[in-house]
Amino acid sequence: MPLLNADDLCGCMRALAAWGWSPSTGLLAALEGRAAEAISRGGFSARQLGELAWTYAQLGLRHRPLLPAILAASEAELWSGACPPEAMADLIWAVARLQPRLREFDPQQMARTLWALARLGAPPPADWLDAFLAASLAGLRGFDVKATSLTLWALATLGARPPAAWLRAFEGQAEQAARQLGAAEAATSLWALSQLTRRPPQELRLSAALRRPQKQLSRLDFELLADIRMLRVVKSMITGPAAAR
Image (cartoon, rainbow, N blue to C red; front, side, top):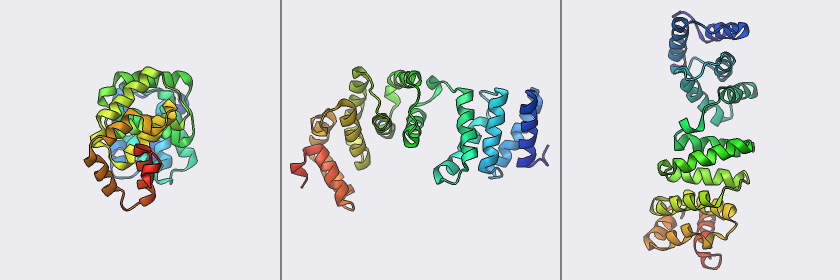
């Protein structure tokens, strides 16, 4: 087993998947241990990671310790744009086939998942989105500044229409975190809430919260001095177009 490389491990798992034979607990643990060691050293390519994820999905191997390692190792390839389409398709299909339940996700994982769908321009099915909205509302207290702004942006980008109660709750969450918002989160949250509520940014509770402490506007001014265009955009959202000049 220690001599098996990435291709050997993928070949073993591919053969098992082709026969539909789930390995014994001992054999699976040995294969996973060797694969985890190789993955930690960067021994798997994006193609091989996708193939390994595919075999897990074919065999229905849910809740296995190697899956998070496969996904974590794939993340860098996915972000870099270097991931081959076939490997990306295998990874996405495997995750969908294994059907992780949204209630098992933490708020940051939920936000990143929805953000990725929005970036791909791939609206999720209505029942999945309903489940997401319910799960995110239930876990609202765990959403930090970044997770909140990512979630709002993704929903607005996907053209979603969350219920009024959900919008009130998340607008309140953003409002409570107003003092912690950086310039990017402030602009993102204001734009997204404006799209979702169909109200001008200046009329939002978050905008009023950002206007109240003058130190907040001064901090955002300083943060955005290197980007005058962005500074005008943020100020326009907070104080109105005339005051942003």
